[in-house]
Image (cartoon, rainbow, N blue to C red; front, side, top):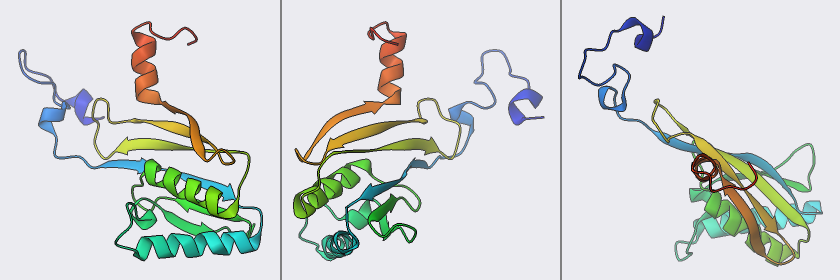
Length: 160
């Protein structure tokens, strides 16, 4: 039996499992995706770029602050981009655009992420996805499940 089903609420009080009754929560963003950079040499160059940008304190962004990177051992042309505890999708996008420029990557690439929480919180769960045109060196689309749901429930979406 769960805590919420085993405790009776007192009229006029907060429900026993309400956010006000629980301890602080930790929020996380999770992702795990592959970026094919075409050659094993490009993968090595991208890994070197990740390491040098992560060590440069003058940079606007440090990739290591937003995600981890490894060359996929089963496919040496692919970079494995993932979070260890919580990641930052915006830093992933900046790094991938940097790789696209440096390695002259073409085509579309995308990834999805999940927003989670260590405690049950209203509006703490969701996610999203981004699509990048590597050749044009720009993000061409994204979706947030939280914003999509809000718009759909308010009737602002034509195609639900």
